[in-house]
Amino acid sequence: YDYSLKTKTTVQFGYEHVLSGLSYNYNTPAEILVNLSKNPDPSIRDNVAWNTNTPVEILIELSSDPDPDVRSGVARNINTPVEIIIKLSKDPDPRVRADVAWGPNTPKDILAELANDEDETVRNYVKWRG
Image (cartoon, rainbow, N blue to C red):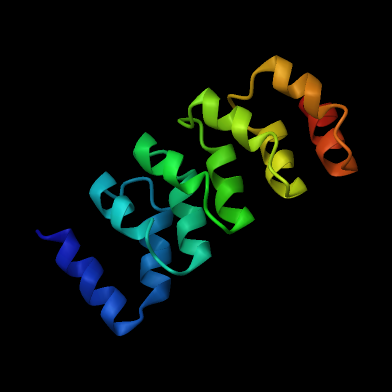
């Protein structure tokens, strides 16, 4: 079955809820997630960013997305490389830094830095992590 044809057809007819479901589903093949990572809808890119089936190369690309929710999704993904987590820990948007603090693979030294973040929510996320 040609998933790329299905994705192109879905985009053509505007079935955003179908695309959202594909981007959210852990069983979606990586090649479909690669296509969806280019979608203009940031909520779809956010779903791709935290989907554990998304290739690391795409996570690296999405870590520079203009939408902070997408960058937050990258911070929450267990497969995001530590170098990208370190980069996102300095993001100008406190929501991204909060998700770095909550992220599953954030190094302890980064958590120590975020414990002194200017944003209270970021500091609280570090505290709640224990």
